[in-house]
Amino acid sequence: MYFSEIYEQHKDMVYNLALQYVQNREDAQEITQDTFVSVYNSLKDFNHNSKVSTWIYRIAINKSLDFIKARQRKKKSWLVNSLFLFGSNNESFDVITFDHPGVLLEQKESMEAIFRCINRLPENQKTAIILSKIEQHSLSQIAEIMNLSIKAVESLLQRAKANLQKYLDETGGKD
Amino acid sequence: MRTDLDFLKNIKKVDAPEFLLTRIMQQVKEQNNPLMTKRTVFAYGMAIMLVFCLDFYVLERAYKNNGHNSTMLQSFNLDQENDLYHD
Image 1 (cartoon, each protein chain N blue to C red):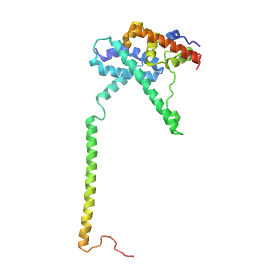
Image 2 (image 1 turned 45 degrees about the vertical axis):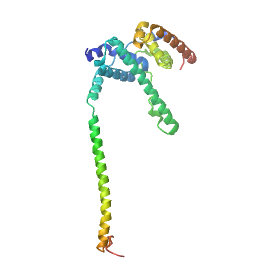
Image 3 (image 1 turned 120 degrees about the vertical axis):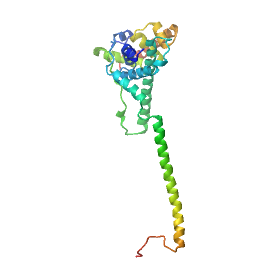
């Protein structure tokens, strides 16, 4: 299978998934780029045990989570620097702005509040919610992508929903 | 403000930017032809080490020769200082 063919078939899927994780155009582009570079490099090692789309989904999820972790590490190191280096340039840290092209302007405020709560969830709960509520996948599809049983996905979604409800109640739907 | 999860269904799917493929292929190309290969880095490292070793060798030799010169000057009863005028 040719790379260009795979890219054309899956580029929008990967870009949209990355957008749900980072809610920012530029970051999503970076994740998409990293995902397809990984796909290109490991295409020859791909064993057809799973579907190509499932395989790419897994890579995209891992790349998105890695990107978020790297951003959090950067944020932590910035905090340490700002504590010990008085007068340092505080504006050097990039504040991540909500820039999701799939969200309508009139819904932006509400979506931003919900995403702020989703971003507080543990990694696997966040993935389950994104795949279920935004990407609209079935339980069996989510189970295949996450390499879990359907029961495990169900309980993951239940916990995610409970946590989300708690976070939303805490914030009261406000910033 | 809506805060229920079904509200997330309103998120629209968007198209990936066209320029991404060019960027991906550029990154793949750079990976395959890196600016500095391991061999180049090793060669540069060895060259720098060689220059340092030569420096040490030359300095050490100069120091040793300096001792030899002073013995020779003393044996000829010559002054080691270069003072021509004693004001």
